[in-house]
Each structure stands twice: as C-alpha cells, then as structure tokens.
Amino acid sequence: MLSRVAEQLYWIFRYVERAENLARFLDVSMSMALDSPAGGDAVWLPLIEACAESNLFEELHPEGGAAAVEWFLLAQAQNPNAICNCIAIARENARQIREVIPNELFVSPTHPTTNHPQWCGGIPIIGSRFSPFRALLP
Image (cartoon, rainbow, N blue to C red; front, side, top):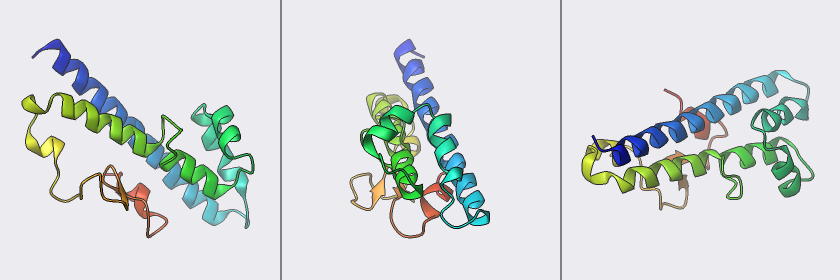
C-alpha cells in the first residue's frame, strides 16, 4: 500500500469518527433536553465547550440556544468540525484514492448523492429532529 493511500484512509476514518462522536454528543444532549425544564439551554452549551469551538460559536450565534447549537454542530459551513463538513472532507479524501478503494466505500446505494439539497453527506438535515443524528449511529 502506498503511503499516500494509507494517509488518506487514516484521515477518512478520523473524520468519520469525529462526525460519529459529534452525532452521539447531540443524540445524548437531545435525550437530556427532554428531561430538563423547558428552555433548558444548560444542556446544550457544554457541547460547544467540549468541542473547543466557543469563540467561533459566540461569533456566529451571539444569542445561543438549542437550535443554534444543533445547527452549528450539524451543518454550519463556517464550523470546520461540523458533522456535514467532516463527512464532506472524508468524501474528498476518498475521492482522491477512489481508484484503490472498493466502490461500496465511496458510493452507498442506500444514500442519495451529497448534491441533493435535503442531504448533507448522506445525512438528512430536514424532517425528524432526531433523524440527522440517528442516521450516523450504528
């Protein structure tokens, strides 16, 4: 195996792992929010601190709130560690070594293409509030 291919595979799986971990964080926070008092933003703000993105979040969303945290961690274009961005980077790494990886790794028949307006890297970003995160979890 070429070192270029090995490095690309390493980064593919690191970005996928990062997206999966963020999805788990969001899933747990959603479950905790259901048990907290109405308007309990205290469940959401520690996610931003755990991701070490406090400054960027405050710059983009000075009002804060649950919806802002969800959007910031799921699909905010300016957040390099958003789930959609992690998956896009992983797909780009896979595209660079497409000639040596199986088709199944690059194209999944069960997911629409990433160019579909309602999907972000194979993750539904509309519909059920829980669907974006549950789609990533095994």
